[in-house]
Length: 125
Image (tube, rainbow, N blue to C red):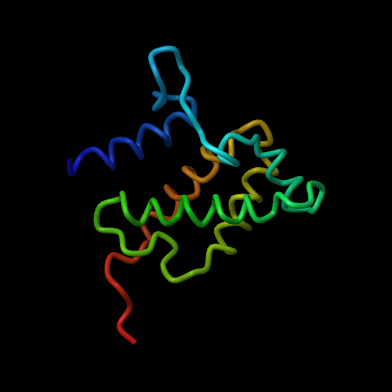
């Protein structure tokens, strides 16, 4: 079980960058809700072009980051104390450069980039 999360994460990352993909034999996978949006749509929502969808976008990003904290080994906070709004800005910057990428894959890239800086234990305050 310890190898499942890192392996899944690696496969997702490679899928975004053209290598091996974490998809079915037919080359497909299920992304739920906004995770199935193209980056172009996510940027449009963030810019206010689709009123009412902003909450769905924010909720998806927060949920994805929370899932990363639960699934990834030795991870307390993938954002290393930074709020989800920082992740949103970075993901949307990636999306502007990669409009056809699915939002779920854009978040996978973000999570991979954050992994080295994650917090493994709560901060001592």
